[in-house]
Amino acid sequence: ESIKDDKSPVASKPVSVAESVKDEKSAAPSAEPSRPESAAESIKDEKSPVASKPASEAANVKYEKSADPSAEASLPESTATLDAETIKMIDKITEEVESKLKVAVEETIEITEEVTKVEDESAKITEVLKEAMADEVKTVVEESVERTEAISEVIEDRAVTTIDEINKVTKIAKETIKGEAKKVEEKTEAIVEETSKKVSDIKGDVATSISETIDKAVKKTEESSKAITEEIDDKLELLAEKVEITAQGAVEKLDETTKTIGEALLKTEEKLQDFTKLTEEKSKTEEKLQDFTKLTE
Image 1 (cartoon, helix red, strand yellow):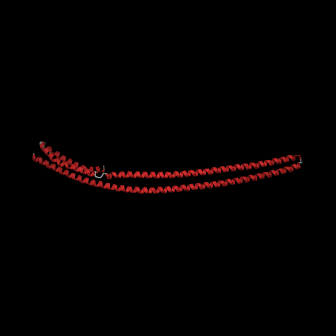
Image 2: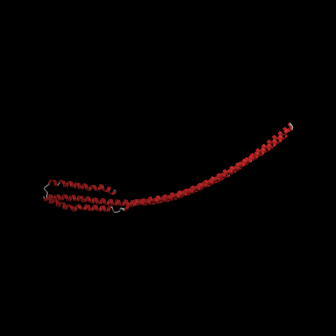
């Protein structure tokens, strides 16, 4: 199409020359309508060898124009190959990244399950300690009640004694109950303190274990991510080099094609100039023929 567009302004020149010749021809015979048919036929026969020459020249130009079609056709093919290889490499990198990310996700799920197990075990231990503490407190309270009942029985037994004795016994009973209550309070506090300490220790161990597990998981994920990133960078660098080399080859091929087209255009212009000269010579010949016709008449 570019050759066709470049040719069009030059090709218009011979047509205008031919039209000028036609105008000159049409002006001359109008003054002499009585020219015989035989003279016209002889002029037609003499003109035909000259007119056949530009047709052969045009055929030569057409042949040269189609000399190297492979130069233009090879460029889209290389571009298509580049696109296919690029897509294939990108798909491969994507597949590898997805595979490694899948492994990392599975490892994270396993770590989460382990953390959940540790938390479940911690909860069970806490529950057992609570039950144990409740049983211990219950036992102390039951013992206190039994002792209080025993003291009450003693008071009832001595109810028949004098008021002083009753007061003494009551005082003793009060002190005894107060002492027992204090013992119960101290023992309960000791149990609660010991239980809290055990729960705190267990929680501390569980928290440390969970923290270490999470740190390991984070470190492992970071290492995997770093390795994947480095691998992707390397492959992208190789891909960029390959694309650059292929693009350079395509540019060189395009330069060669452009050079070939330029040379073909120069030859075409030369042929058109020759054709213009032939048209001018044809016009001169027609003028001489017209002069000869006048002389004949």
